[in-house]
Length: 68
Image (cartoon, rainbow, N blue to C red; front, side):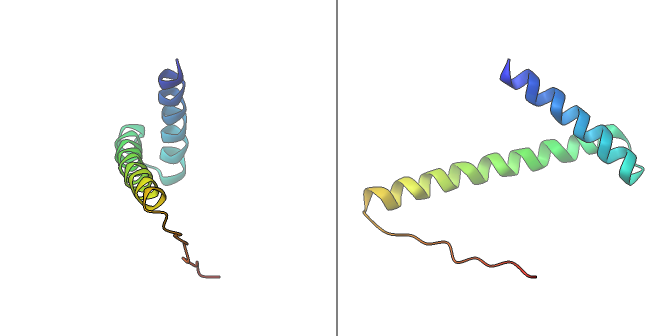
């Protein structure tokens, strides 16, 4: 059920973005799918790194800053 809800939410987002950017909803759905895939892969890397640091008892700090 959660996956269906997520898919419907992605369709709504794609339709909104398509209106804003004057593109097709299909193009936006493809882009959202690609973005979601990238974020999912990134999360797997984050989880693996977190587990590694925890197992090795390493304190890891994120010192990333943003402009503005």
